[in-house]
Each structure stands twice: as C-alpha cells, then as structure tokens.
Image 1 (cartoon, rainbow, N blue to C red):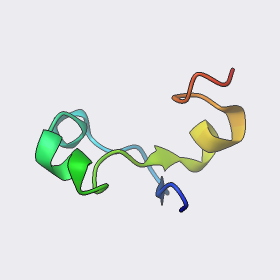
Image 2 (tube, helix red, strand yellow; image 1 turned 90 degrees about the vertical axis):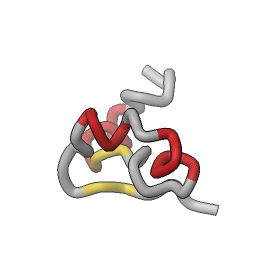
Image 3 (cartoon, rainbow, N blue to C red; image 1 turned 60 degrees about the vertical axis):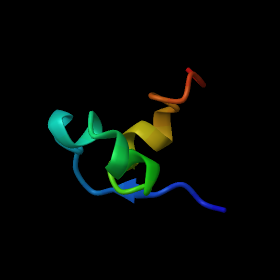
Image 4 (cartoon, helix red, strand yellow; image 1 turned 180 degrees about the horizontal axis):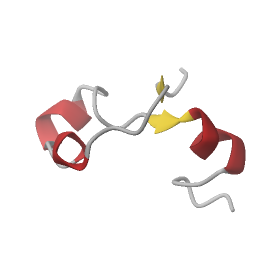
Amino acid sequence: MSNPIATRPIPRHLQADERLRAMCLSGAMTYDECATGEGRGDK
C-alpha cells in the first residue's frame, strides 16, 4: 500500500483532525517531505 502524497502542505487544523487522519485524508506528506524523508524519521 502506498502513502498519500500532497502537492502542497496540509493545513495544521486538518492534520489535527483525528477522524480525517484515520481515513488517510489529512496525513499526506508533500513531495519534498517524501524526497528528503522528513516527517518519517528517515533523515
């Protein structure tokens, strides 16, 4: 299964919504975060 990728940062108020995050709608990383490993602890 793939992780969702966003073209721009998800607003903080949406990231904080546990319901949206559980549905994988607000936890997407941006392309830049994926490329650098930022947000996953892969730095």
